[in-house]
Image (cartoon, rainbow, N blue to C red; front, side):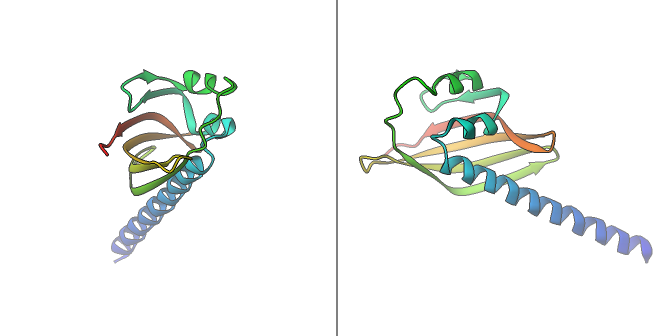
Length: 137
């Protein structure tokens, strides 16, 4: 009986941990999208060893993203949101799939199928891989 109770407690603990971590990751993703125009947001979100595949078909890392700040062209006032977010936690790695919605200042709305792989390092989740595919209008 004690073994059964211990097993139930362990399963409940794992389930609560997964739900808590999913909330942490969801909050991280939404906070990133809310402040995507801020350099500090990118510095925190992307891992130094990031591999980023853009919807335009180019591949680059965090250094290229960070180099884009301070280039003088910050005229893009788009807002971003996420729909249909799915989070799968695999130990210290999480896979996040979602539809990114870009709302341009001109009123245009674009959708992208995005996948982000996060790794938990030193107690913080950071994106190590990201891939974006633009959906047809």
